[in-house]
Image (cartoon, rainbow, N blue to C red; front, side):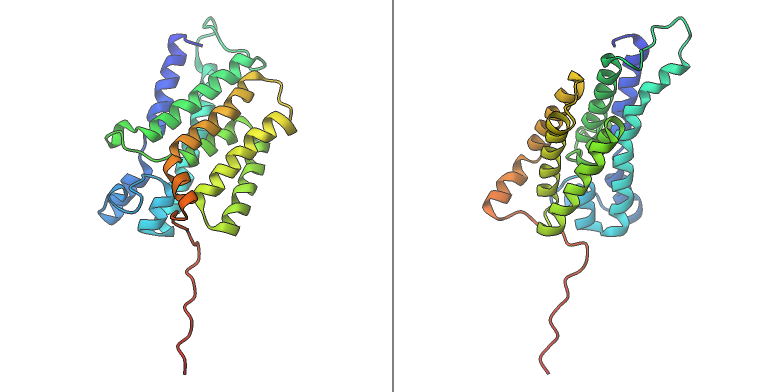
Length: 223
């Protein structure tokens, strides 16, 4: 849908995605730019690594919300005049518009206009987008992420495996018959693999940083 109103929705989705949550929280409350430390990534994982749990949790929540909110901008068409070409919510075109909205939010997160076009890797925003498109698959994929992360303590590995599972679920298990969802399930995997290409190299080399939600206990000194 390329009608003027929907083009405006796409722009709004990009601007929502461009809100640099980690950068603003880091500068406002800690006086630092998280992109200058750690992995130099403007995302929840690096925020946790640099600033800790209290800063990372709101970053994670809001970054997920960005993807969900962008997808649901499609429902703003209800505010358009009656004679405007509205989308039929039962058609594949409706799903396509939702996917495009979500992709613009991810683009904004990767290249935020409000932060010098230096953003994050889009995992949380992508997850929010998945929630808005397919809640069941999102819940199962998140469970897979938690399982992999709980075992190996690699956020990147958990995200990659969860992304693979999402595509597998949509195409094989759910046998989704909407072409837009099938294409998106493959596209989201390609996006995540692209943004995590350096992480994949580090995983292969055994150099990827682990994340521990709880501090590892130190051995007691010998008495």
